[in-house]
Image (tube, rainbow, N blue to C red; front, top):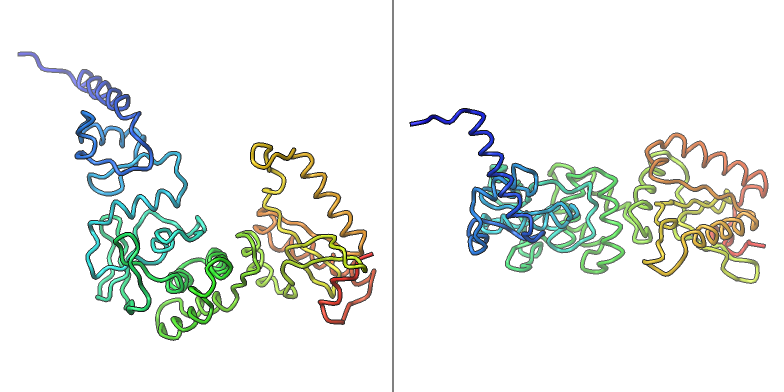
Length: 349
């Protein structure tokens, strides 16, 4: 009786995995795949494991896989929640970033990890089967049921994330929620929940985030800009500022403004310059030209204009220097404007 050599066994394994790769290549993306769900297609658990080893699938938990290469972090996290659904008993409330994803909130990707987060009112938080358990009470008025899962309310979700996340994405989420969700997640409701959270980790930070949140911020970049500007100690800017001529005609609306320094600020996420014809029927060059004309008109009306991108936000000292130089030029040209900031809105030419 012959004995196979190691090389032969290795070749057999490679051939088996290549076969598994071909057989699983047509499986749908964005769905939970288990031995039971793929069995009608003639596939086996071994072939799922082989596809995982080859990097064609991710393992969401034991025996549960998915093809996620073309999914964004929010979609992938949603799948993780679906995979963990039968691990959650009635004592578990979906919370933190998982609650935000399950509710369909516009979650900053920086907040998303590969664990499903729940809160239980029992001691002994743990991480099991990619399940992160937080210990804490969730009163009846701070959770609802969505698609069969108990989920923290929008306001409680924002507060929880503001306690444990980095400040920048926490402010971005709070800004978006106040802008989009209105009374359901009002600042007053968030502050009420904070009042019931005394002594919990991160409450001080969460209180600052909720107080600082502003629904006028229209993008994550504007929200992060606000945090950076605050940390630099520059004067608090006006948001969504309209510059008009003396006759009241609108010249332009800008992300930030310091009327007393005759300076405008614009966060450029480069989306403005990457609009493809397929998206809105406009030529990208025309978009750039129109934006250049708009900026020229703002400058002609006597305003300094400072633009920045994500790169500048990563180098805040340079941004601060550029802003303060613009403030100085604006003051030298026009003199410090000590009137009500609103009066500057009609001081175009």
